[in-house]
Image (cartoon, rainbow, N blue to C red; front, top):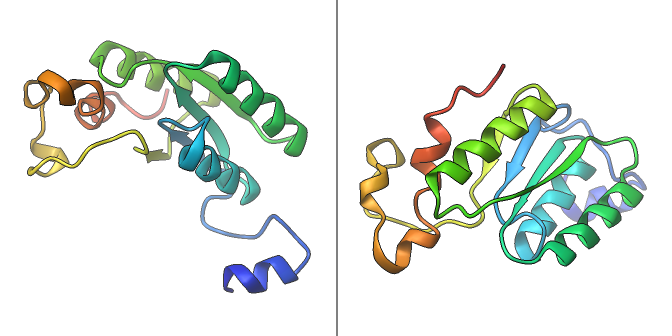
Length: 145
């Protein structure tokens, strides 16, 4: 079904592959990240949305999501993905509050000329440090309780 066909079907929810999955969206409370979070929730996913700088916007996002999807699990997490400790904490919070983590949308990320499996904290320094360490920090934590 195309997006246009889905809109004409009269239903927001469908039987997509994200139904009943837990998704963590970095930068998930604004812009493209908020649109991704909204779309995941509309398809049945529980959403954990990350933000760093704007708590008022994050709260507005949370209120809108809870209004639009009152029965859908939603959490909002503050953290700087430039901090490996924050990354680990947000993953741990997501797992603690949702029971597991199935999907990571690294919306607040950067492309590095390495595969994610070969990246480490040391690959991120200087100005790119604020957006780069997340992939190595996420994958080092077990993704369920």
